[in-house]
Image 1 (cartoon, rainbow, N blue to C red):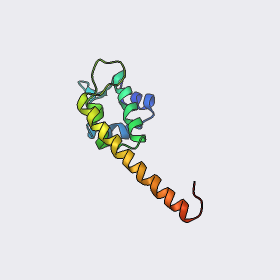
Image 2 (image 1 turned 60 degrees about the vertical axis):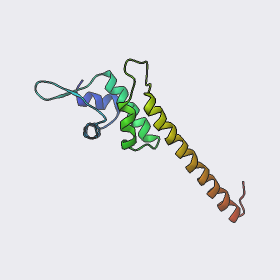
Image 3 (image 1 turned 180 degrees about the vertical axis):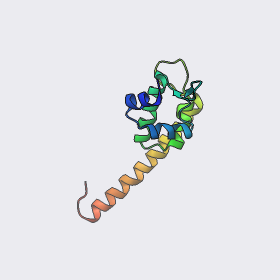
Image 4 (image 1 turned 90 degrees about the vertical axis):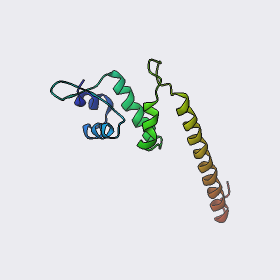
Length: 115
């Protein structure tokens, strides 16, 4: 499929798909005339990129995730190195959540709305 069809199937603009390509998140094949061609796996990859980005991960952090897929597995299965990296990311998020919960509690106490 060409880039316009990938855009229609994923809801991601052609401009953003080209940006993903520049960021090495997508690597389309090229026809002899230079047109980008994509497969069904690219639809899943774009959907995964969008989901991870909406979850708060920067594209810089998404890049190794999509690059480290275990090919041939059903759905997405990350490689071991990526799992370790993601565990660290989850730990960092948990620390941030704990800090924010502490700040919220303190602020609520200051205004008399302790939960």
